[in-house]
Image 1 (cartoon, rainbow, N blue to C red):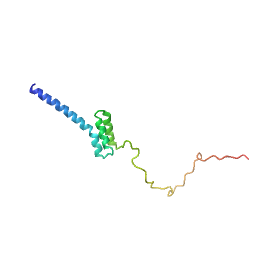
Image 2: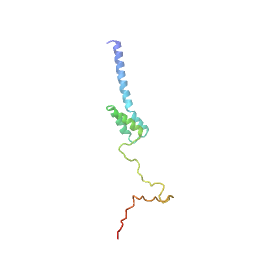
Image 3: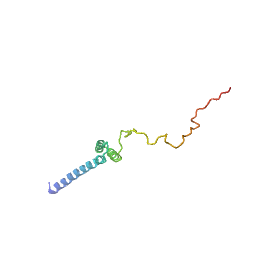
Image 4: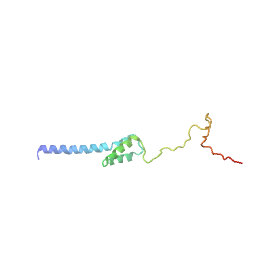
Length: 111
């Protein structure tokens, strides 16, 4: 092999390694975003983004998930322990009149 063959082989290996490391760096990006934003499911986002190496749509999902701040699997994040600030007794408005539909029909006697 000539000197040119060695240089060509080196350039090919260097290019392949650089491309592989670049792809891995890009696929860890959603995990870094989640960590910077203090996302509660940071580890799950990181795992999903790395699984995106195999299935690309998972990486896109992880990227959206990291930016959205959504917590998957939790319907409500905060319990309503406090009552509303305004109460009905302090209201200046008169109570609403019942609808005619809501009233029970009265029976008429035919005596």
